[in-house]
Length: 250
Image (cartoon, rainbow, N blue to C red; front, side):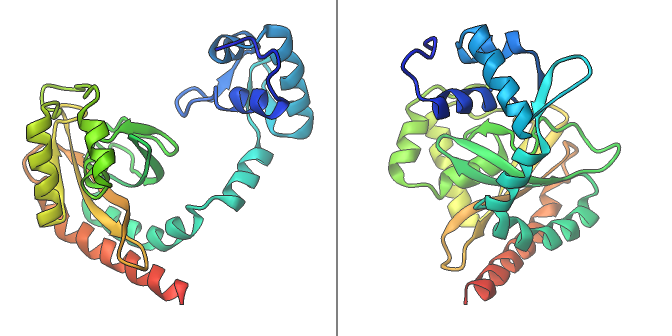
C-alpha cells in the first residue's frame, strides 16, 4: 500500500475502518498504520476525527475499536437486513434441534461472508464469526454458494489457490467439480473435518423470492458421523425462509 499521498479522504478512512478484523476488535494507532500503509501522523489525525464523530471509540488503554454509531448506521442500511430478519426464526428452530452452531452466509467474490450466527455454551469448535469470511472451497456454506455461482466464478476459484485447512479440505479441482455437481443435484453438502478435525459443516442453499440461490444456511456440529441428520431440518428452514421472503416481496 502507498502512504496515502493524493488519496481521497474517503479512501483513507475506508482503509482505517477495514483494518479491524472480527477477531481483533481493538487496535492501536501504530498497528492501524501498519495494516493500512498510511503514515502514523495521518492515522492518528483521522482516528481522532473518527472518535469525535462516534465512528470509532477509544478504550482506556488508548486503543480504538469500531464505534456504536458506525455499527448503527451500517445495520440500518445493510442489504442483508431483510434476509436476516426472515431467517432468524428458522435459524432458532434449527438451533433448537442441533444445539451447536447455525449460521447464514452470502457470497462476496471468492469468499463466503457470514452475516448471522447462533451458538451455545459448550458447542463444538467453530472458526467462523459474524462478519467473518472463509474461502468458498473450504466450508460447507461456501461450497453451496460456489455450486450455484456463475460458471466464470467457479472457473476462477478452481483455477486459483485452494488453501487446505485440514487434510480433508477439498483442494483438487476435479474432485471439487464433482462435489459441486452433487450439491446441485441433492441440495445439500456435508463436510466432515474440512475446517477443523473435530467439526463437521452441513449446509443447504437459500433462495430469494424469485428462486435464485443467494445465501447458504448451515450448521457446525461434532464430527461424529451424525451430521447428515441435520439436513432435513436445514432444508425445511431454507424453504421457510424463501416463503417468507416471497411474501414480503409482494
